[in-house]
Length: 422
Image (cartoon, rainbow, N blue to C red; front, top):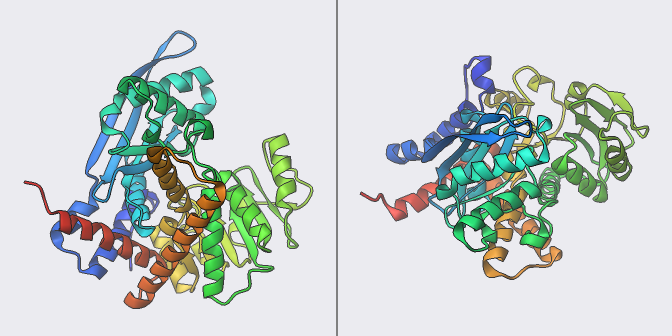
């Protein structure tokens, strides 16, 4: 997949998604009409809404909700709050959700949402008012059979509780299945919080086995120590891996003998940062990404591995815990180096798989034990890993393009069977 793009295009997540989609669709000989249908979102909602701030002033906020495809079921995707949220980002994330749900073969389509705001500058009351008004603005487009939001960057269980309550008040009945990632007391699922990290552990172990590499003593570097990165670190350490590096936005840690993740989690809870932890030496986070290791797990944000640093990556395996951490241009460089990629739409699909379990439990009114959640999660991700690797071998493509091809094939197949309403 030879690509010539500007740096701005490389860093645009929608452009990156589109480049990979086009390449995979071409490999599939996808019909031109279906190509057009699947390349574009089916619906883009932009809302501008006023919120009364604590100081008595009214501020106007902008929010987005994008449905990429709902051919296989209700839209599914998180809602993020950040100052830099933009439509291209939300479009890309919605499309990735379409492919992610299809790769793990769960009956959802792709959606995503966001509100332009800085949560660090807002009170709890202001965040609640923003959430409730945003929910009211997109009310007709969400619902258990339409689109099921979830937490994302700077949103959490409390945000989902506000959305569920606002929706329920308008429906005049409690509707727990309108969102996932809720508190367990409100219909949330056991195991949901750890699910993305657990899924990363599953696919990392499968990748090691596929490459005939030992799990015991495997050297792992993780970029990002939030919910996803910390849970992946904890679970991989329990499997016998050595977590030799942790990179965060404010600094990194390195210990060739392995970092005690339990102690680091406790330290971070006390200090709100990993900086200063005495069980490892301080190191620049950027240097950790290019350090020698067996597995590199970018588990924070988009566009971490780019044309600027891809040639320096020394990991044998890159397992993408974040959405879109590797640009399309960097993909080519990593492929030339023979690095084994576990792409984001497979690697971090544990979260949406557990969200599917939560949605099912809410609709049944019957809740599973955590062991059942974890067992079914592991089964789905192992099968999905095998499906992607098989596709890669059959079509002589890398794992990312194989994952896209598998997903596109599944979504296109459903659209062909449903036909086009006229």
